[in-house]
Image 1: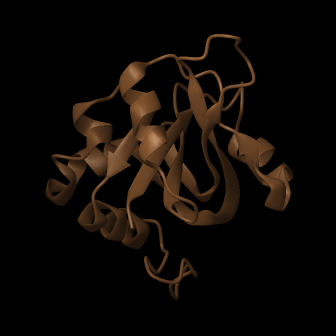
Image 2: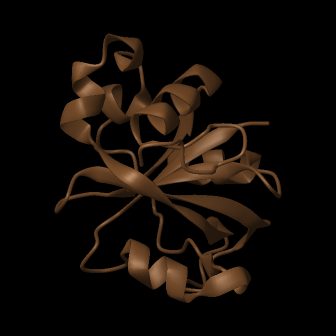
Length: 148
């Protein structure tokens, strides 16, 4: 299973907006970067991703799951652009800030640090486990760890 990270500006589409969509989820539309689109083409149903507030907040605030694989982006007639649908799974008990990620030597090679501008990014399993632990989540069950 692969892991991912989606960035969103909270004033355009925040974590509360994502959660409000419930089990149906929402199309992750509007991506106009080939590399980000190609990552979405690789995504499989059930894979998990971090939901990151960019611009304001600069922190991982939740976990989403891929609930529809790549399909045409409904916000354009240009068939080059595709997207996936994601649904909220759980809150990050303790949001993980970009500052905390950058300060953790185990995450020095994470795309969030090295490819800051990319809105859809892969996350290595070791990075997934580390960030979940930092945020107070068990990385396997996605349940809060005692103390959070």
